[in-house]
Image (cartoon, rainbow, N blue to C red; front, top):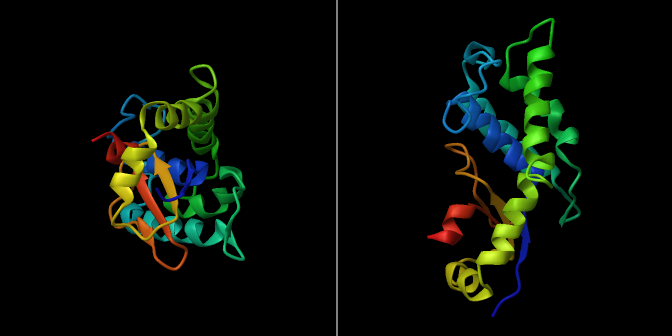
Length: 166
């Protein structure tokens, strides 16, 4: 059995969340956030933001978890510039509430608990037998189309939780 570092990164899960909101895929009830607030080139830009986040998550080859606040600077390019960022701040607050504070410790905690509580080391080992990665980032849903899900130089793999539950 191989050893893996398994992490549930806030910053990548925030991008998956924003992608789902933009596509009205999993969070269609966020009616306070108008669809036209997203930049028309959102699909191209989210790939750029994703890649920038992946690069900045590492210092000297080590994963540094700075939290999604650090990455907000990249997120502005995903939206139209408005004088009043109340809607955008509300969207971030929604994510923060959903990710960190619901049920009762947040969905990040639930995802981590699900991973460790229902997925055996044997399953992880079986799923990873063909992979070179030593570090696995788990996201709650499929990463946005076109985003890197493997980085050979850093030996990381990014998978949705569904990958391990199949």
